[in-house]
Image (cartoon, rainbow, N blue to C red; front, side, top):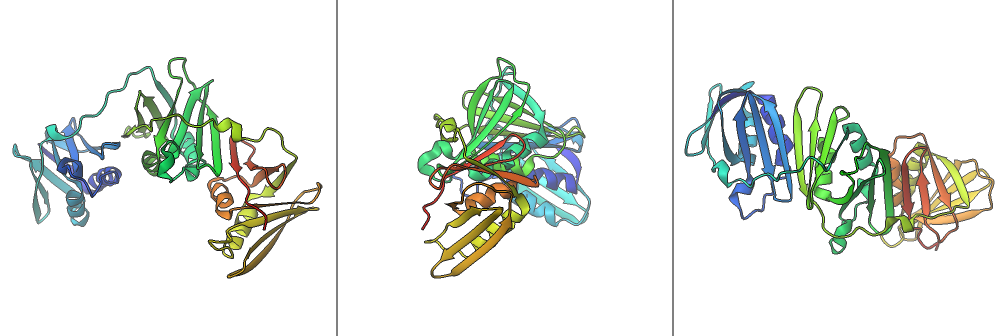
Length: 369
């Protein structure tokens, strides 16, 4: 293999894939990046057997071929090189020579045959949508993914494709975020699956505001191909979480007594300030709704207390409810609308946060002390 590549292209490719490489692996091949060169393209692939990321960039390929090289070493060397063009040559023993100006390095690699093969996906189970749509949906749900490994089916985002809609749900048992968008789903493409948190993190990092994403899925794997406007593409393949996702519809309150419009930014900053005055023992913030006013209070005996007041359009009877402030701050951070709506029944029933759009967030209240 012999090629020349711009330093920034090489670094962009390695940076995109090296996140999934685990440092503690017993299989040496999993510390390596698979490099494939052909038709003036260089493709980098890295995997930890759960998530695989492949990224293709332009290169001047004199002689095609494939090999694997320790990704951290290659990235570390190339990042420090001072030139703008890097020449890479690989011999039949998988020794990779890197030349740039007066610098010369040799890195011992392993054969490309040892690298785990990529799974194949059928064409029938697939949908195509804008990257910005998927990025927005993941941003509005991923913060609610559970980190409790005992409930592993909740350690990811549940995706449902049916009735010409794509629905994403995440919950940790104390709160639930749901968003849906209209998507062209064929009869054959309908289905449901759970994408693990690690793949969600990679998607959050790699999804762009332009271009489109093609999603294919099979029995236990899914593949996201991110295509940009310049013809570049990133492929993310992930194993799916096995198991049945709980019936999330039953935790969404059917009726509501009060629906109150709130200025998102003002509400968010007031909660952030009040959160400073909470502690591990006393980690709740009380929202008290009175005539045209919302009073936000936090009180932790060993820390002190906080009082905030926001003018709101409220004519109902006085009502107070307490929440973990983090569970209110997370969705407000993820949203961009100027106005949000909180729907309440009473102090013991879940609160629901909504916007004028396809988003819904249910949060369990805390006991009022």
